[in-house]
Image 1 (cartoon, rainbow over the protein chains, first blue to last red):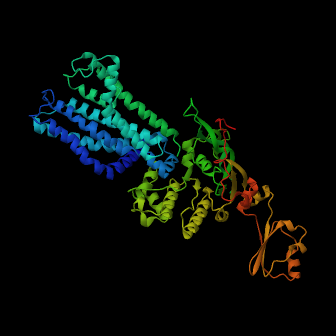
Image 2: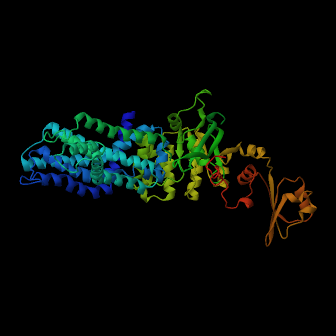
Image 3: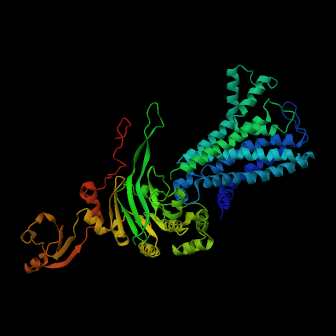
Length: 276
Length: 341
């Protein structure tokens, strides 16, 4: 068995354990309501959003429906992966795994991929249903590039939350601490980031919440790069030409790269040194 | 038996202790652990690790399993020259490790749990089925882990340690939770493995049972190996002689009339019989007692047991210690100012 196939086999076991878990059965209705449910609502031909705005095309509807990913799928990512390391550590199975000749780096990669795929597969499936719903309701398909960016961006935000959570899981001996960290981080980036943005704007002397104020838009766009949810929306906005927040595409993709590589590197390094 | 399959040279690992101070809240210092352990593991032999709680037995096993990194020293195998040290991955390839008390849990089946570990070693399905049969879990292959008893969990952990046919097997408290019949079968299994050339290290608190199994003994205390060798060699290193246990009916005789050194005798008087333990074998004593009309029911010359060896090595006695844990885990290795002693 090659190293690659060993990692893939381990990934599959890790993924299947989570994807067919009771937790997943509990979260599936939530995902169903949040992702295709929002796509159904926002694709209503008669919908009028705050400010009298009406979505014009399929990608714009998918952009609004991405709130379901931010609110639902990321939370599910946290809840699926918070015990990836801490549970095995508490039970002693981790010690057994660490004593195997499979390099710890490979074990860490398989853990990341397994936890990620466990939330990615149902989310992608629901995103695909959302695209079909939008087509049914609006009669418009998103372009291939739109779909590509939408699916990849969603994959990335889920990966980021999985990485934060398993990193916390590897540092904590109690599962409660790991889940608190994951939920806390989710809460910060999902609900409290607007407060952080407002505080920085206030401290910088920028008018708060003025949509037409270039300084506010720039500041909000810049600060969003420091939040995974913000980067996710930046990535989606690259397919919406009517939105310009003064952030170049290369900056957005660079931050997406940083959000991916940095926690992954930290987790792999942590697993190389972890004690049972 | 004789070829060295694994050699630890000055192997050191010290756990990190939190030593927070005002300006260094996450400061850590090195605390207890293993200090310059030198140990040779011989092919086809069973080495017993014995020591009080916190002596460092589990830490030493984890070092030998490649789970804890060596901070100093090295691990060598027989195929290598004396300079090159084994890498962690090579070490893990050779060694099967059975940690203490793995609490297998969840909805996963027994077979799937073992398959998962097996894939990390490249074991195939037939090998996994064979191992489950070997440890007596063939009827529980489809049971969920959460349905297993403690003894069954121990068997599963043993099966996991045997994956990949390791040439060295490290067993941490393997008899915990096993019923007497399973323990006997376990000992038989160990014997079969050693006949195939597998070298085994066992750490156990059940020292009396351990003597029946082991070929060599290592006494540990405060992170150090105090004595190592066959049981006779260890006894000799500790200057311990064979003891004589005499039992008889009625009232215990006055040994002072038969012996010059009465201080080396412990006598227990029961209702209808008595027992005396002589610290040293006494030539001609049996003859003198019989001639003196003492009614003797048994006379046993026995080598010193492991507990006596451990007490002699550590300078402690069972009466002195009682249940107190006198190991590095409670002996402060740093002062109140956070400095190491």
